[in-house]
Length: 387
Ligand code: MG
Image (cartoon, rainbow, N blue to C red; front, side, top):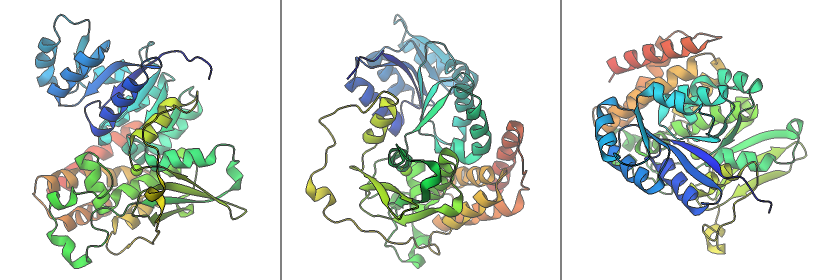
């Protein structure tokens, strides 16, 4: 292996599940990576702990009311401290930053991702909502930027790996695998009574609360379909969702000659993060996360239950309408999931709120950035009245 320059990484969302696992990888390869910037929304204590351990040049706490706490705790360290949404946008464009890991939750990832593209950074994209909300705009920007996106989402990491060495015109179909979430075998009539605590018991993946609820409703798989569409230039109709409860096959690509390539690995986000951070130089060797035969002795696949999980069809509907409709869907989902996590609404209300909001908010067919911002605000306000 040729020697590689040390790369300065900006970890956006360092205190979340993906962010913490990204720091594990950075710590595993100290000769390759440095945690240069750490950004958190509100988990000040963990951010301080991470800063003292990784000694970044800069830490940013998004919530301005927590700035004094972080600054005081890091006094005497050679670490700059900043706060607020604009500080994040500015920081990712710093010359010293090589790679930006976008692991913030939801819509908040959009502006920093656009800043990273504008400044030509390598992006390890974990914030799928960015592409759901504004995939068309992001894709346009990437055409005229030196920026490259490596997906961190395990399914998209799988598509990426399956496509290495292949021609785009040889692709027939994407098989997007889904675990089916905690309610895969729950009878449909019992879903109404499910609580946040029930939904947070994901069978395979340890993830943050928001994405775990998205997994229980299968909204997450709808988001991933839209994410795949933009990342790989595939029509929604050519993306097939297949439930694979073991989460070992992370997704598959079918080609025009009938051949299918699949990517397999343990259901552990360290694997796709390691791949995304390794690119474009190559795979990062590790002794961890290797499978044994028993891990993949019994793999099963089944069609998703679209009546039980109507958000799958809602996502295809939003994708086919295009424009700002996926942004509307995402905004309504963020509001509904937050309300569900607080116990303010029931499980089936999540679909009701998203469906009603999509019917109510007008679609802007060729949106500008400002249209996305306005639509996001409008959809959130309307969705909140339904909670
Ligand atoms: Mg995923």
